[in-house]
Structure formats: C-alpha cells, structure tokens
Image (tube, rainbow, N blue to C red):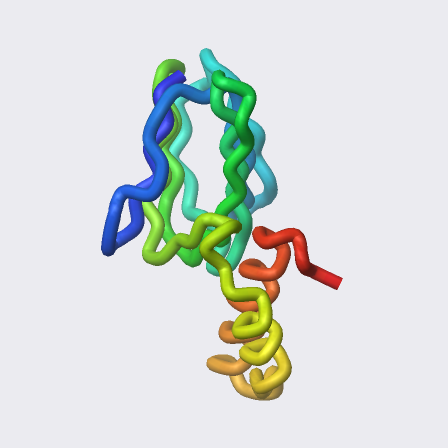
Length: 124
C-alpha cells in the first residue's frame, strides 16, 4: 500500500509499506493492505510506526492530525511530526522534567515529550 506522512512544515515519509500502526483518539489501529476505508483523528501526542516493504521500520512522534485509510493508501496528516532519529532525547527529557502537569498546557507538553521519548526508544 502507498503511505504518506505529511506534517504542516514538510513531507516526512512517503513510499510503499506493508503495515502502519497509529494511535487514534479511540484506540490503536493497525493497518494492512486492503484495510476498510477509515478516517480517524490521531491522538494529540502519539507514536506512528510504518513498516516499509523494503524491510525497514520508521517510528515517528506525531502530535495531532488525522489518519485517512483506503484499501490502497494510508495518509497521515499531522500537525507536527518527528522521525525517531531526529529526536533530541536530552531535550525531550528536559521538557518532561519542566512540564507543570497540574496545568492543561503543562500536561500537553508532558504528553508530547513522552511521545518523543517513546518514538526514540528512550521512554522509561
């Protein structure tokens, strides 16, 4: 199936994939070729994994957006996304430590930092 992951500022991933895993506001969804057409809102701070047909796997921290699925295509339209190898783990940990989770903005910042750490494989 053809997969495109596009953030507001750039196209991040485009190609042929055998599987996509994403977390929506109603739960986690795994997509294989031939999946039923679906439109879903992505979790505000989550992780998306794309398994390419070439055997590679790409993990991304994705913040907000939508997932559009047809039997032949998957399109992820994200507000912001980062590929795991682009994530500055120390900066994400610092943001998590500084986040005041007693306030809504702080809780959102903590969720984004946690998603970045999970995508980078550095979550504790």
